[in-house]
Image 1 (cartoon, rainbow, N blue to C red):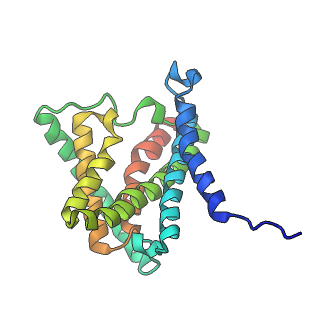
Image 2: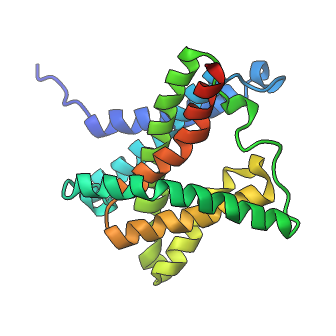
Length: 227
C-alpha cells in the first residue's frame, strides 16, 4: 500500500499558526494576568512570536514563488553593509536622544522607563538570553517592517514615501510604554531604517543598526550594572 505524501506546506502552516497564537494564549492566561511576566517568560514569548511572524512572511513568499532576496536578504556586499550599519550606530543613538528631548520640550510625555521592568535582564543567564532576544528582534522586525511591509505597501499605495511612513508608524505602535515622546522617536527611527533599506536595497545594514540600538540598553547597560 502506497504511503500518503507528506504535506510539508500543511505542516509548516500549522507550525507557524501555533508559533503565533501560543504566546498570546499564554500571556492572556489567568496565571499571568494577575501580575507582570518576568523577563524569562516575556523574552521567550517575544522570541517565539517574532520567529512565527518571520516564518509567516517566508510562507507567503514560498506560496507566491518569490525569492527571499526580494525582501533585501542578499549575499552581496555583506561586510560593507554591516560596516555601514555599525558606523551609523553612534550618530543615530545621539540623534535619537536629541529627538526625544525635543519631543519632551514640546510637552510630549515620556514613559517611566525606556526599558520597562519586564525587559530588564538580571544576572548573567538573563543577559545571555537577552542577547538572543536582541538578535531575533533585529532580524525579525527588519524583515517584517522594512522588507515585507515596504514590498507590499509600495504597490498598494503607489508611493515609496507612503509605504515608508505607514510601516514606520506601525513599527512605533509596539513602544507605547515609552510614552508619546518615545513613540514619536521610534517612528522617526523607523523612517531612518526604511530610508537606509530603500537606499541600500539590502536588510543587512538596517539589521545591524537595529541590533546595536537594542543591544545598548537591553544587554550592555545591564551588564555594566551587574559588574
